[in-house]
Image (tube, rainbow, N blue to C red; front, top):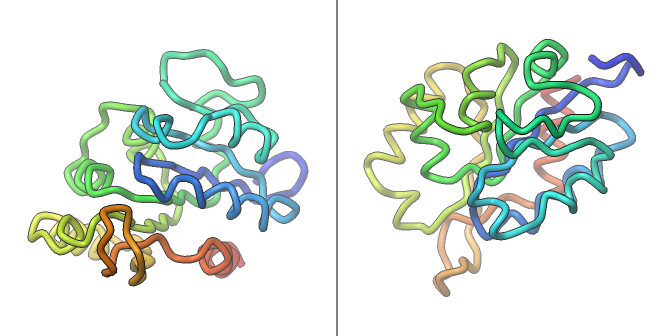
Length: 180
């Protein structure tokens, strides 16, 4: 919880086309919770950090070695976080989390936080159905992670299949549930 009495959500954004839908989650919840966004380099190819900075009102973490934080550094942020959410959670991010790889800001935060975790997988249906992705999700679920399954719909590849990010309003409702 922050000094204003708001619960703190660290929102990880990994690199998938669904990134463009994520700011709506913050817009829905910003009066209730404080958001700090951590983006992977791949995510910045889909949406700019400036979008998240404006919507959240907080600096965006891109790299552990950039001192861009005006409010909270990455060590202090781990101490005030109440929930860690990753949306979209790509196959790459999920694999890193399952195997304890910490080679960027997002995967390092993942290992440094001791709070409930919500992953919202979003990816091509073939990647989602790959044995490695299924095993990684099962591993994380067995560790107590909350997994919000992707939904069926039009994917960036042109297919209609399971793999879409759930609706931002549904993710917002899950965040409220986990923080209540």
